Image 1: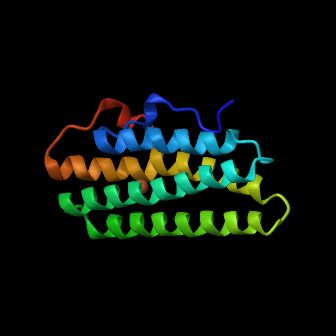
Image 2: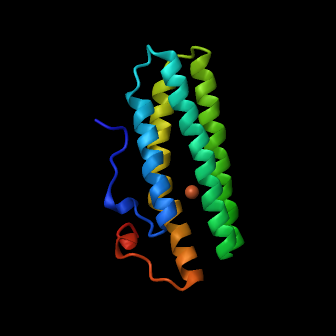
Length: 145
Ligand SMILES: [Fe+2]
């Protein structure tokens, strides 16, 4: 069973971001499914996820900046991205030092954060971008409000 199940509620209506979210979820699932006994493959899976996350955050931040959404959300959102990247790096480092339970903690954090972030923070971002661009948001965006 996958760490994160992709669902229709994940769509923000921003095609580039939706496509990247799908890949992000796939990379998190791949990390979770990699046998921990295979340290090299596990390290590559983590590094690919970490690199992709940073690239993805840049795209979101670029789209928010270009759409000139409100500074308060932009700042909040960028802080959330920075905290996520720092926490994931910390947990991976702790796992590498052999700290008990840190891989499970990393997977739990990835799952919770990615779900909450896509379903809440990124939806708010998408609404703000759609408002600024004068585009109607997809109907499924309102199911969680
Ligand atoms: Fe985001």
